[in-house]
Length: 217
Image (cartoon, rainbow, N blue to C red; front, side, top):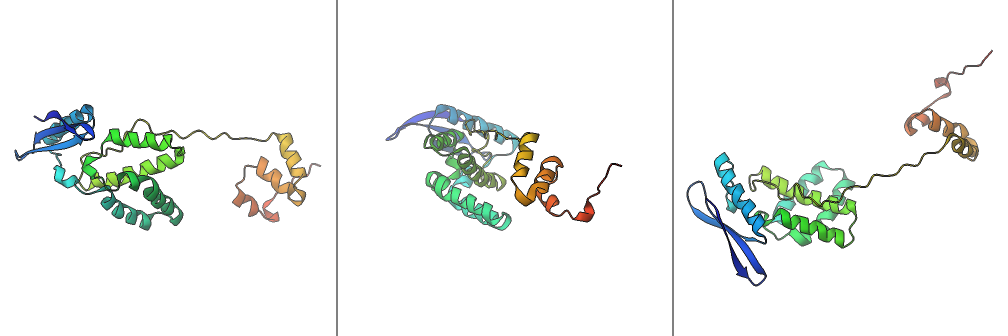
């Protein structure tokens, strides 16, 4: 069974998990900042060994930055140019400064949540924070697929800011008519868009022959 104990560093108390690999070799993982994280890791080690899903810690020695190179290349090939630019910028300005040099095996959910809290506390907006988290989670997700990690520590965080619902403003029928009256030669177009439910592309594609006029006798 895995065991958990603490040790002292210049940065304060840290926690270490000692355990045996499936081939009975003794090893450990250290650096946990809380006992809770260490206990969770110890429990997961035992579960993974029992389920045949154990991944040796040596597989997680790559840094986040090393994996990010491959992840960004993949996104560059598959994403629209504008979307890729936002991902690359988020990696460079928000993710890499905090995580680039970290070994993927050392990343914990607790630390990811602390990072999110720092981003929010430093004034980053919801979209910026969620995009940065998505980049980190995507990179670590690739590590799981490659069996370098057993689970993604960036998933299931509890403090990711929620997107606010956008408030929609609608015109009354009277307001639509006043708007149409001010639209000079586009009065009919405004009324069609407002009352007929056509999309913009559908409205501008209309031709005279598309309209059936009914005249009361």
